[in-house]
Picture 1 (tube, rainbow, N blue to C red):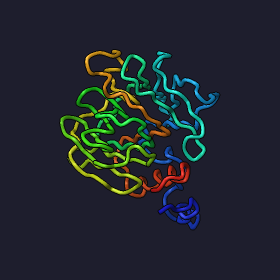
Picture 2 (cartoon, helix red, strand yellow):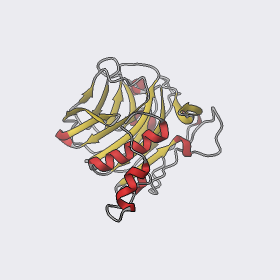
Picture 3 (spheres, rainbow, N blue to C red):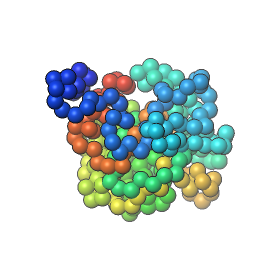
Picture 4 (tube, rainbow, N blue to C red):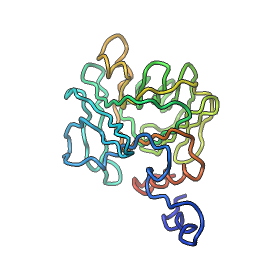
Length: 252
């Protein structure tokens, strides 16, 4: 259920409570915040070489190879744009990457839609046994979070439709939320992330195709990605979710 911003700010306006939530940067611990609607100077179909980080940390995911840059697409979700990743299983697979440490616990919010269902598509990739979020894995419409040899699954999850996803990497207490509802809890592993690669594995982004590296390329739309270096409280998580809900017209 969505709350209006006035309802969220009412305790402050009445002289109590914390400072009002405005956007994801209002919460401490923000590492990365990328939103397609905040990219400027782009027309429909233009290549995206850099996905601006709005957190103030300059963690901008980039791709210097023109053949591997995703496309900017207008009017995709609630009249807002998204990035289109081709998911090609060859040297032309699309990706954006930035390297920075993000150990557990951490929390990710992302809005995406998988366009081609494969055995495995890397929505957010990293090195082997580091933090990864995969879709279409193990069973149709599944999403999987992993940070080591363990797996946190939510099967038959509807990854072929836009939704607000939240993944909490916190070792054995890791969680997946969809539209604000807790849908899975398990051990996702304890490894840390050393960067973020959107749309492909880090091996593919750093070293190019070869062996089975390219099998995880994601054919998808991605509208927004937010990462914090902590587990958010229920109130903080709801604030971010409701912000995204109002923006994209999605349930939370």
